[in-house]
Image: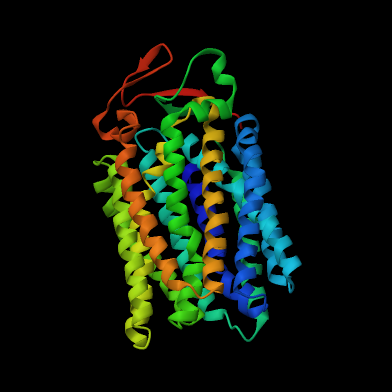
Length: 431
């Protein structure tokens, strides 16, 4: 098995463990442990805030030490946090476990993205990111489906078992990462955002001057807030408290999300590879706006259990369709904007944006859920989806043609010389 496939399989197994816990985190904290919806939102924010604290240092570590040791350390820390989560019974202990779990997973994300870039070429990178997303969501969906059959809100021990499985899979990810042979040279595409001379030294200064990267980050924040920031908080609360679906049904909804990804990922990839990336991202906003409108319909029709349940499952399925449009688009876009020596910091910065959205999103969803303001909550998420459409359409004005339309093979200057389209430059890999 080559390095890329080994990395992807290892992370898919880690995602399989996450699937046992992700759909049930809000229910676990708010109902099983009796902490309440508002406090549960704060716990999820602590989970994300811990990631915010470590990510500014993770990118530098990846660029200087290589991604493998960072990934191993992060996976082991996340495993300890997951086990602590399952054993916690009070708000302070849940918060402590959430901090450790969030920090560990934050270390894994940019390290993993960098390893995928190292093990792929410009011609195979979109497919590599799409395959990674496909395998991760397959693991999440299977884990969620199995977890939904195990979980029992009247028996806290069933949740402890789920978190133990999650912790074990993080250990497996660390072992697999340690066994991977990374290439001695990394094939990097022509990076139009690179600059010459001494300016290359300051990672944050380079990124803040990179207007395309700044706009991608702003758009990413809205994307992650609108979808992922609501999965475990506001959306779960709405489904269980308003529509009155069971935790097992949430597992089925996550499985539907995965089913769309499994069926559509490589079909959509053929479409996405021949379209402008900015327009593809804008189309995600349209799909997610429809998803939130269907969720609102589930609330209106909640007295018809079959229809309401179907609408919730349909909402998660539409989220999946938007996700398969994003997976071969956003990750390669960030990598292709990055100067070679700042690849880890660009990936970490985008992960930082994601975690910021995941810190604000659950707090927002938890607060409105705790107050019973589900109407304003759904209206706000429809508005955010429409904002994605606007920002995506405008992003194309700022992206270099070689990044927005890679299928055209447009060359762009790097430093004092251009690299022909379709070619890559090889740089030594810090293993």
